[in-house]
Each structure stands twice: as C-alpha cells, then as structure tokens.
Length: 91
View 1 (tube, rainbow, N blue to C red):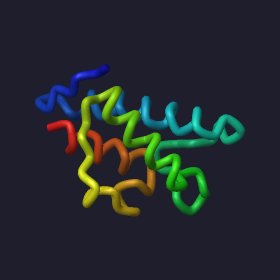
View 2: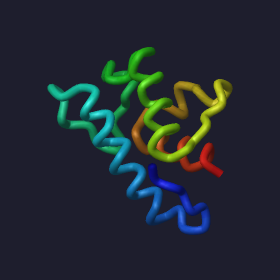
View 3: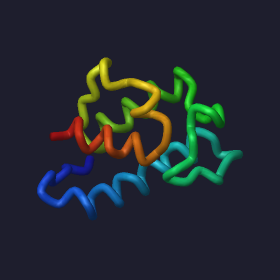
View 4: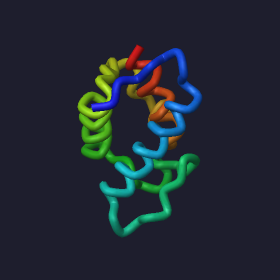
C-alpha cells in the first residue's frame, strides 16, 4: 500500500499515474498501448467490471475511498483523470 502525502502531490501524482497506467495495461494485456491520455471509455478498455477493479485497486494500493458520486465518465475517462480522482479521494 502506498500512502499519499498530499503535501507533495506533483511527484506523487506522477508515480500514481504510472501505477494506474500499468494496472490498466494489466487488465487488457493485449493492449499495451495505454498512455496517461488514452480515452479508456471510447477505446472500450474500461467497462463496468474494469471500473470496479480500478476502485478496488485505488482502495488497496492508495487507501483511496472513492465515493459513488465521483464515478463519472469525466473522472474515469483517462488514466490521468483516474489519477486525479485517486489523489483527491485519498485526502
């Protein structure tokens, strides 16, 4: 588990973003081209099951509790958006 120090979110966000990208790549091993700006929804990489897996990953890895009202397409569209959601939810 990684504890997020909210005082240094710049460097920590980069590390979280890297881990989010790697996690999503692992959900879809055939698609190794996931980048921080990849549209996960339009590409079909993030379906309802994958969303649950991302939420569990965020909770386990970063102790982030993501409220249901924050599970919007905008917050889940890219790995970068997921990273921002994790950082905001871990505060």
